[in-house]
Image 1 (spheres, helix red, strand yellow):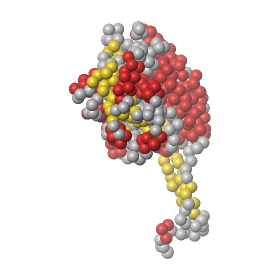
Image 2 (tube, rainbow, N blue to C red):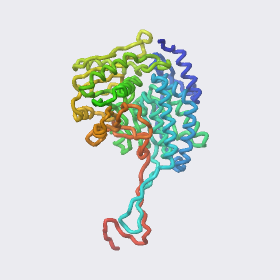
Image 3 (tube, helix red, strand yellow):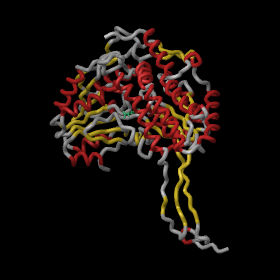
Image 4 (cartoon, helix red, strand yellow):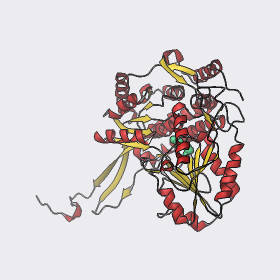
Length: 508
Ligand code: UN1
């Protein structure tokens, strides 16, 4: 299978970006982005200076003064138009996702579909930003809460979902009345400029300020400028636990709000009653899909001793047949790792696993390096572990799956929960009591707990996020919108008298 040339990829990227309305000459600069597909340059763009970041935040703060007063359903109208533009440009954006981060076409299209879906969700939400009314302890009093816009939202997103994660934050933030400043991954500036160009168009058509949605490009220093800016009310950051350890305390130090979506180390328990066909398919998509580069990717299988050999054999057989190669080719299921660093971490983890007693079952090697020395394709890998050693406690962002055995379910749940991360988890079982136990307070400690599906591929309707070193934030559906608003508790007295709460008397 041949990899595309630099000229071909550049031309494809430029035409997709232009179709979305990006002015490439205005964005040009000295920072060269490489496509993971062939390891070659795809675009050279200018990065924002700290002053430009501060200016963008200041403009967003000014825009907030007006945007917060626009009725929420009218704000929803802008998001609805954005969703229409995304539908129209779904293939353009998906092409950019494939070129800049290496996702296979189906997954890249799925990512843009997720943007469309969150827009639909946010439009409905724009008429449902409601608070509660509580019973007051005093006569002729009303106690209620009102939700108001919060302020400027700073979004820091990662390479692996270069557009969807921004859209979850942005669609919700916009209907909540908050302008957004986005610092995308350095790996995916064209994806960001193209998505933001579509949103700018929707804002412009409705006569709203372009400052309601802005993009600042650059590395961590650009993100940290936003993190430290007191005008940024909420910092929503997706990335490594290391990044979150830096961002969380800095935002907290200025009493800002943060929403952190950090590492995962997601396991599936395979019980004796599991349907092994379904289980195998679930494991292979979750562990090898997206070349193991989702924060929800499956990294561990904890299988009952009665089925562990069968599961390992089936997964290994499926892995041996997985088509690896250019994500632009229709049949490919496994694209490249994002860069050389990702490959080094993968190679180091494979060695460490073997050194700690692991047996390499399938994979472990780099492929297509003869064709493109700067592109990092690996064969999805399974290592059978005797125990959950240190390397298994670490998130390696690659298609590397550890398989372990268990005897009783409590032991399996303890293994599931023994890692520092707490994002996603699943159990494959036909036994309802086991499924219920796994979802109960005595079960998985993760933010996502699934039954008979893998760990990845969450729908937008639920709250997305996890516990412990995953950071605790929740984005997307359910009541995650509340993080983007501030709550006011209102007590209204229509009694004509002044009874005090808690029966206090204070006669003057
Ligand atoms: C991520 O990897 O950062 O559940 C987000 C999923 C996707 C989102 C993953 N909907 O796999």
